[in-house]
Length: 368
Image (cartoon, rainbow, N blue to C red; front, top):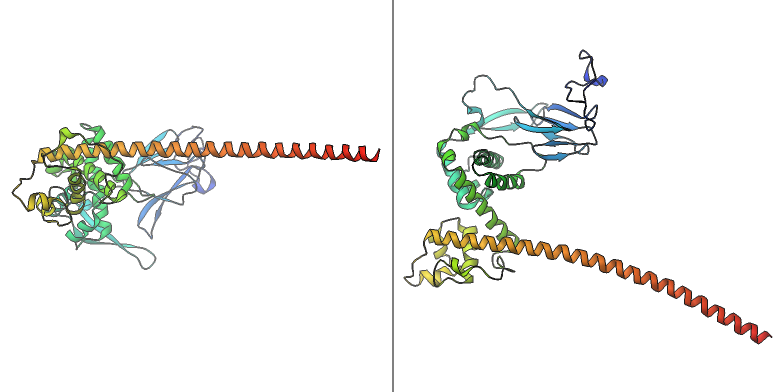
């Protein structure tokens, strides 16, 4: 709440703030309220001001009912930034609490937490392999791989894993970290609080060593899955004219191989060459499976894949420009049409007046 209230002994219901932030004009006297929700078993923040607030970079105004908070959520009210932190529980050390899956049993007045399973290092390694093959949002593959874990726990681990990569990449590769932030916002449920990194993941040596390469793979797979999901498998390169011939991985490589490369990665995962060749719906079986033609090297295929993604990005930029131009031209056409219609209406009214005057003059002449 806004500062300058005074009188700490009074309750906040009397209008006296519990926490005085500053005397900034954009901070209201009753700006926000943090309370514990016993049904959900977590803290929430309520915005009570028209000026709104930011929670983990997302803007919320007074029309939002509540915003869930996690330990580590970044809150900005006016020009004041602060973190919402919860105390560590006793008896749980070395970040073991973060590696435990907790589900809430609904029933009764208060929800009681129940510890079900833990994420071991072997499971984290399996999770890493699946995510680096199919993408961070491959919920079907992850659900089949971890049948003992709930879907909410898998999605929670995905967000934690991605936030850990962001923290490790933001110093050496800030551009990669920024793109991962956009992906995290896409898979994060609306209104959910921040997802600080897991202590268990930050202590994992593999994720520290390969954070940048893993982040680049996640970005690449996210772009491929989004392109295939938006345009469809067969029309994924629709609107893409030319892709650099210098990046061809082999002499027999054609445009249909570019399309089926994206289709194969979306279906079978990154690096699943044998599954792509055995897939009867892809053209690789006719080219490689029926003959002794070797598969191109991984470096050449990677260069070609990056060239395809650049072409897809240019296609998206051009389509966005066409949409904006069409909307502007349609609005201009509408305004010109309304202007001509109004001018015709005005002109029609003046012509009818002239005709009436002529009729009156004729009648006068006839009477005379």
